[in-house]
Length: 371
Image (tube, rainbow, N blue to C red; front, side):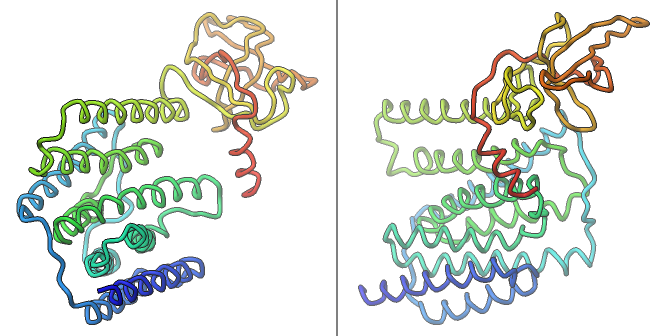
């Protein structure tokens, strides 16, 4: 058995290296090549590792629960669209979509889960971590062409929505597969990945909320299955469960707060200063917190407003009421001239409350690397 596990360990490291090389050199940029590569590897590993694993006896019930969780995920996602609105999908369902997307992606999903199922014969923690990495790299090949990673916005979206969330999801997939086999994972992935190719519209959801949903939902699934669905764990103390729920609730609330501030879509927002026009009052690399307030703005206040899709932080030097329209004339503290255009309530985002020094320097460094 030790020899078998050593061989599996070598196979896992070899797969990690192969997939990283393929990703770096974009050999897997084409879905057909990825499907072919993963299916060949899955067949070879299946022929090499023939030993069957033992799984939990309530496998059928687990399958039903995971199916319901997958359907609920899509339902909740589209319910959000009732508030945010919907946009047309760029991919329309048809024969071309089936050939170009659904078929190769289905092969990639199936091959990846066959690999996971075979490699989980080694139950060591190191092996499970490597399996999560392998599963993440395979999943990345499905999404790698969605975002243009040559610019900062596309890179951050790819890292946040795809890389980090794929890693979190693969933690769940590995847990489910180790306990109940690969069928529940296959069902969940087929539904939550392929649904987008069948529905002609999608909710217009802010990027940060997509990241949060894709990270938090697997955690909910894990808690339900691990603590309440598994009969062997029903006798754990209520106090331990309650403490864990409180910890998760506090963490989730903190994440929601940060997401809400960064999105600038609510009463309060946070913005990193990227220019030197307000040096002295607000320096480059500082983060300002502002309130979405359009009243009680007076001369001397520092405000946040939009100009050509860019958020600007400048000081109000004059306020005028012209034809019942409030106009705010602004200027950067280090600028010699006032801004060319005045600010109205339509472009005004809010009033700066306070700043935190230096907190935004890492994001500025990353942005400069791309620019």
